[in-house]
Amino acid sequence: MREIDLFTPLELGSLTLPNRIAMAPLTRSRAGSGQKKIPTALNATYYAQRASAGLIVAEATQVSSLSTAYPNTPGIFTPEQTAGWKLVTDAVHQQGGRIFLQLWHAGRVAHPLWHPEGATPIGPSAIAAAGQTFTPQGMQPYVTPRTLETDEVSEIIHQFQQGAENALAAGFDGVEIHGAFGYIIDQFLQDNANQRSDRYGGSLENRVRFLLEVVDAVVQVWGTGRVGIKLSPSNTYNGMADSDRIATFSYAIAALNEFNLAYLHLMEASEADLRHGGQKIPTSLFRPIYKGILMLNGGYTKESANAALADGNADLVSFGTLFLANPDLPERFRRNAALNQPDPATFYAAACDDSVDDCGFYKGYTDYPVLN
Ligand SMILES: Cc1cc2nc3c(=O)[nH]c(=O)nc-3n(C[C@H](O)[C@H](O)[C@H](O)COP(=O)(O)O)c2cc1C
Image (tube, rainbow, N blue to C red; front, side, top):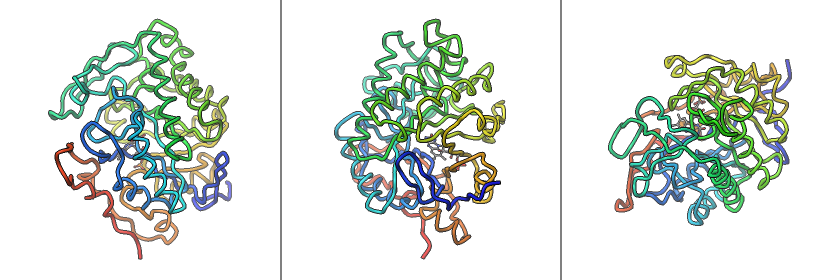
């Protein structure tokens, strides 16, 4: 047992986190309006309210216009979006916080109905995810993506790199690469979505190549200690499955050791994963494989997080729904105060376009109460 708990400061690269309570990335579908995907002053207020986190990881943010899976999600591929994010980073820094941006490409689970001119999403292989997804016309089947040609893969890697550069210009403290939840990196990793026969498919080494090339490109922008990555070894969301998840993720995680990342963010299996036939792969399986800082996530409470820190399985723990509903979560943990209950009805806002002055985005967003 180590004498470490949620209130033990942590050196993360060149940053010092005052506590080990991170805010997990949370898509809230409230970034601007229409197709512009520009963060607003309201988004800045929301993140600034949560600046007492040891680290905020801001929500999944598109690196490409061909990556829209949900309404009102932010981007980081235009100067206007970068300027919008600057409002957010300034507000968080004024409150003494630290904030990373999660870089995201949805790949095959984007939907043409969200895209200008109905463009077909791209993916590692022309295989649709099983099931249905959100569209402006309600739930619709996922579409079959267009297979990326080998020489197009570098364009997607370049989009992640450009997103990383824009995040630097927007004043973030670092970036987290979204490798979880069945989005493009996960699609290349797992063999139910990747049936390529070029150097990005087939063997484990080939399926992990896209992930490593993205990490390398982003580290070139940010240097070591400022880039994290999130992986979800047990995840079934967005139709994910693999013939041997433990082998796939063990290989990928071992390969990440060479980059001296800020952290590896790993998700536990959720109830939904188990309902969808997923396998519960404990994150502790990967602890001996990964040599750097490990952030764990998924259903943690103050008590279970402290236990994971003390037994060495985690160095840092992120909280999603608890931070969503409790802007002052660290203070509530410190005082053993009661927690606000998250309201799932307001997790995501409905689509709202430029013609509407007030989309009511603040409800369930910036109005959760704080302690006196
Ligand atoms: C409303 C909502 C939005 C989410 N959006 C993202 C996201 O943008 N990126 C991501 O990696 N995970 C996302 N997640 C997953 C959370 O980061 C986290 O992994 C999950 O909520 C489990 O942690 P928790 O039990 O502490 O809530 C989202 C979860 C929720 C509830």
